[in-house]
Image (cartoon, rainbow over all chains, first blue to last red; front, top):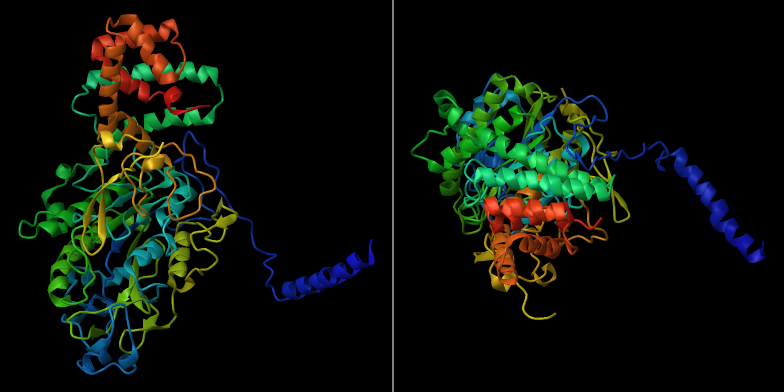
Length: 483
Length: 149
């Protein structure tokens, strides 16, 4: 060894040992960290059911995502001080510039809060049906987001990253657990009858996970693209084509025995054939009795939008009933009108716009929760209600609506493994900033994976030099809200 | 090489641009995918189901998966139906006498190798019973057409 090397070693080598020993003493090196668990995916059967990391409380998840940032102040976050100081300036508000600019005065909700259920939880008249079920819910009032912009905000809530191109929560869940149903997609996204949310397919994308784990999007009106046989192809022709294909593929397989891609492709055609029967069957709501249609509001002839969302909610329940692992149900869209027209983005005319959106969400979503419960499905299904961020307790300067607010908002959970009735965390006296048990989207995701029996730190996919996770390098399971 | 690109979407401009995946592709769209303008956050109707990487992340390696949506796409999409009809027209033009020579030519064009006698016979049987476009649709769905093992 040369002297120079010896000296270099002495500094980095011995210094390194000393540092490692110090870090270890502080438990900072993560020497105890458990190794990643990368699910083994059989290419011929990517949706095979896989074991969870530890016993799961929830088998399935259904997410109700209110696109456009649904105001906590007009729904679930009751602040007497906001009512008392209605029309007064918010202390510190004069220098505050939010997404669209300056603040007007504090503004109480146009809807009245009333105590609901045995818990007496205060919920507004905007969502009275959901209010009735307050005892079934676990509210998190201290949610925070990293962004005040819809697209990145939706990405963050659905994928854990504000940028595009990361796997969605449902993709991670199906990658980890597969599916219990072999005739339906493992993961279904149900877009609002009005169209897709701002971040569109990125909300249910697979990112860098294999495309097998992307959400399949369809709703009660629009079936899966290309699901049905084209008109010009008769059933006989289709059958003859598949038989012919099977022979061709057998020949080819003989030339390349043991090729898993070829086997997988044959399996995917078989699954496609089963889905061709299974999807129309699950989407056929004509077998639902009248009292169920009425319970959801699917028979409402006065409110077509509500009836449409109600049908999507019934579809959601039917999918969960069939063992689909992860369902995302969107309320609100951007394709047919931005800024509050078709979604919860009530910047300038909150009262008129929410008066339209409230009834579309309220009865159908409440009926979904009730229906899951009466069928015993809530015992193994986690229901998640979320939105990308919250809204300001002030009205915007010169307008009658609320600006974006990622500093504090409300989400709720219900069903399997969740403590109810329960309220976790709080915003300040006006409902502006989360101040108690401040919760990140990472914590929210870590908790959802935990309820599915998955350790958010260990469920990984190696991509581009990283062991990627839904929660990046963050997130703590919110132990306090677990049943 | 070169020339204008094409889009996989119909675009509607509002305060943000809304993209609707094209359902029908016309002659000006019949170019390799490398000529397609890439729209972040959106999935067009053909490649999205086939592990086409999202444009907003670095993708050193394309993930490879096999899904029923791909099967639906190749069996039932209007694009594949259209291409099957065009393939059948080409076969008719190249081999007007039809029969076994046309069936053999179909296999040769689709798989880049001569047809085995058995496959030519089976192909002719399918085409005779169900029409040449039906045979073309079947060939586009064959593992041998889709994969190079």
